[in-house]
Amino acid sequence: MIELGVASLMAISAFYGGVPDDIALKSTPTAKVGFLQGNNLESKKAKAGPLTLEAYTKSYFVDTPILVEIAKCESHYTHFGKNGKVIRGIVNSSDIGIMQINEYYHGDTAKALDLDIHTLSGNMSYAKWLYEKYGSDPWVHSSKCWGKKASELALKN
Image 1 (cartoon, rainbow, N blue to C red):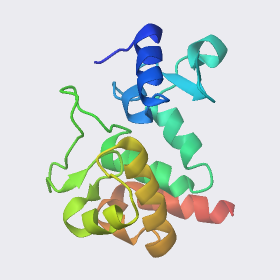
Image 2 (cartoon, rainbow, N blue to C red; image 1 turned 60 degrees about the vertical axis):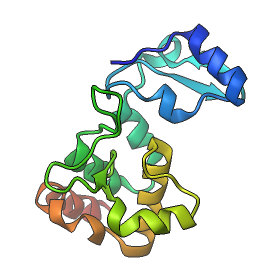
Image 3 (spheres, one colour; image 1 turned 135 degrees about the vertical axis):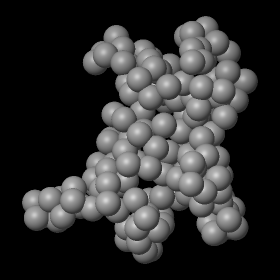
């Protein structure tokens, strides 16, 4: 697990003009991370306990809860492995990241949209774009896992 202290994150922030979310969230899904408010790094723990990648995912996809369920099924809310590299699919190694975006089929489109699906933010942004364009079809192969939940979510709306 990679843990960056506040001093390290502040140094990165000064160098890059902000802490990239992929660095701040590079550790395991339950790791404590900071968040940015403007250019000031604040500890989420000090306010509400540790931020998990699961909580981040739920907040990011608040308007599309099915994508939260898909992330849970596809990667168990994981973007980086213990080795610090982006995770790849077990069945298909072209599937990458928290949303298991297939780089063979979607890599060129993601680049055209100026999204890097190897980063957490790019992977999640592309998933949102993909869902808006095609619905849940791109994740049909994992629908046995999230399909029932999708039906429950549809009934609530």
